[in-house]
Structure formats: C-alpha cells, structure tokens
Image 1 (cartoon, rainbow, N blue to C red):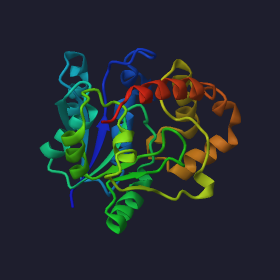
Image 2 (image 1 turned 90 degrees about the horizontal axis):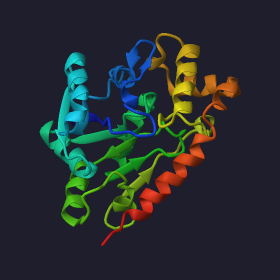
Image 3 (image 1 turned 90 degrees about the vertical axis):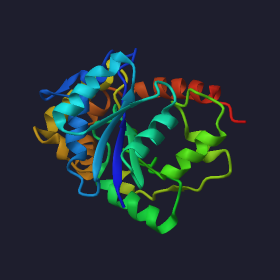
Length: 250
C-alpha cells in the first residue's frame, strides 16, 4: 500500500501574509514541516498540494529544492485538489493536514494506518489531539465519491461531506489522556508566529523531530508560552464557524 502525506498549502493568507515562508530556526515553515514528515517511516511520498495560481510558484520551487513532489491543482476546490494529487501519485491512502501545522503529529501516522486496516474507514480523525497536532487519514475513493455528489467549487471546509451525508464511514482515534490538551499549534495570526518561535527556541535545533509526547510535555512545563496565542483560538473558531455555515449540502 502506497501512503502519501499530502500537505495542503497556499500563499493566499491575509491574516498573516505568506505565513508559510516565515522562518523558524533558519528554515521556512513549510520546509520545517516537510523535514518533520520525512522522519516518518510509514510515509512513502510527501507531496505539497498547491494551486496553479502564480502566487504559489514559490511553493513549487521549495518542493523542488527539497526533492519532493509538488502537485498544482484547483485554487478553491480543495477536495478536487486532494483527489487529483492522490491520482497523480497513485496513492492507496492519504495522510493530510494543512501546511500551517508544522508540528503535526507524525508519530500518529502508524496508528492512523493501523486503524484504517481495522475499519476501512473513509475518514479517520484525531481531534482530541491539540489543534495543530491532529492529522487526517483519507481513503482516496471517498474523495472521488464527494466529487460526484458535491455542487460547490469552494471546498476549503470539507468535513460536512464526510459527517453529514450519511454515506461515509468516519472513525475517531482514541487519544491517550496525556495527549488531550487545548493547546494551539497552528499558524494563523502574528501571536501564533511568536508562539512557534518560542517553542522552536525551547525545544532546540531538532524541534522538527520532537514527538507528540515531547511537545506536550514542553508546553505543560511552560504555561507562559501557551499563553502567547491562547486567545487566538476563539478568533479562529468564529471564523471557521462562519465558513462552515456557508457550506451547504444538497
């Protein structure tokens, strides 16, 4: 089975301009994320899935520099971009998260894959992990099915297709209590960038290798760092709810 880690990435952010090109310990956010997932022995290919818009040319350049695949597809139809990316790389299974989560839990990938073999689920989530650490496991054929039934071109928020159509099997991973935290590890606002700079400084030059356990333990021990971007979660939640309301199913 060929497993690909698809990083959904664009440079259109407005709250924190070109956030994926910001640097952490001398490397861009997107480079740090690729380095992190290159540590996983469970992933056969790492792919940056971006758009055909010229503003995203830099992501293609970075992928070439790192020796990984860059697939360019639809600007707004994320479901189609994910599907076309998996088709292009002939993937049997997809692990996915957006590029603004540079410390996503790569050490949970084997658990997701094992759960897929057990359940044949169309979507596997790990939402009990901190925001920015959780990852998705996606069956490519489920994306093809969504493309058949959807009537929207903007699918940046796509969860309802899996959870509210009644035709897909969704499984949620059971997360150990020690990893269940309300920490925020996603890059959307200037405060988030300040937070990540402190985390990378505190964990050292090989932060990209840090396990989920090491990251959470560090944050448990440093509430002053957690406080840097704690208020951003409410802003993010309100924005996400607005986007989610716009998504109408047939």
